[in-house]
Image (cartoon, rainbow, N blue to C red; front, side, top):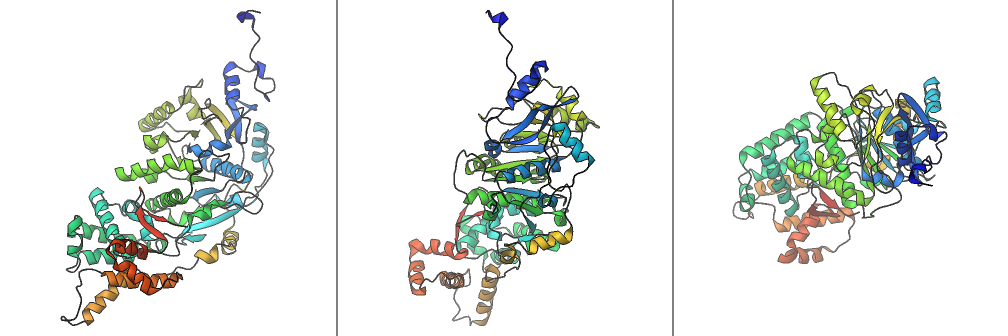
Length: 544
């Protein structure tokens, strides 16, 4: 038989009637015919028809290669998150979801069958069964329905805090210097009043000389930082910083039945504080990055993190902040964590970050204005070559439809596929507030994080020192230029005693008394169990 007489290529297994399908459709079907475990997204759309024989999927091991879910408001992005989160949970993968609008809590309850659900399930050949999934609900600082999530100022670090306070680059560098001083002097920055106390001390007559050898702190910059802290507190932000600090390893738990826990961070109460919640999400991700071990390529992710309203994270961000995000996203894959950014258009995400996102689900875009048309053309350029006219397809997609390209099991991009997505099996809407409150209060973690704790930290230490100096006579008082090594030592010893460390105080005094170990002792005194080596985000690294 000559080459010209060779038989036609076989259709992908499981595609019935495929020989009658156009060659581009056969190529798309072949690109999604994975042999290993995968998440089912939906059925192919081609030439105005839904082809249920051609199923569009994402290989489970590729979920830690990150992704982007984009599209205009009202196109179905939230339901896509819900669909993917359900299937990840069912496969034993923990999921983190940021619920900005308050309509993701329904993932904990079985869905309600209706005509629309039945019609969608029939179109994409889905065996739809109502199901709820194991959930934990969190709220920043306890504002809203959820277990309170707090971070200490020390843990949050100067880079992330500068983003929240909207400081410029010079002010950010000065804040880093303040953190460095507090770390070295054993002044624990737990909440906002601790940071204000340290800044105030460093601009006082006693404290001005402390930073001269390493750059100093100008009065003007200190004033900006203090005013920003005051404005921040006036907006009701104090509850987000403090103790008990949230342990981000809680996000990686698996339920008793083997399904991954879906951690839902309820954000409706802070919708008007976008920089706060977007930066807090980055803190969660950075903290996970510090503490998770390297695992390389795994059969399934250890955790998949959905970062909603991602454009808020990048707006007005400093170069240092963007570099830190890029590095974190690039490296966290090897720790088994997948990150999906959720936003309106790919141009909302910086190019260096976008280049790390191997899986793409692009919902419809609008092209009503010249800016919309420019964004549409830019989006099309981010996709591989395709037999579709993507400018036309992206403006014609209906709700619950998207253009998809993912990474195959071999790590290569799959063909671009317009897809009619499956219906989530959980409730597509919020659960009853009373049921949500009950679920929060009955959660095992509620007792651990519900009540805020205000222990001795920088504010109390500096206030006590000021009182001691005022009560001492001029002839007998020690130098008041800064908290002395002995005061740091005794504070550290007291801190260790509260934590039950059990070390003999005389041994501690011998250790901190030596010049070699003095800096180390102060660092340990800053926060028990914490290394004051800081990450790319300036966050303090924690030992579990």
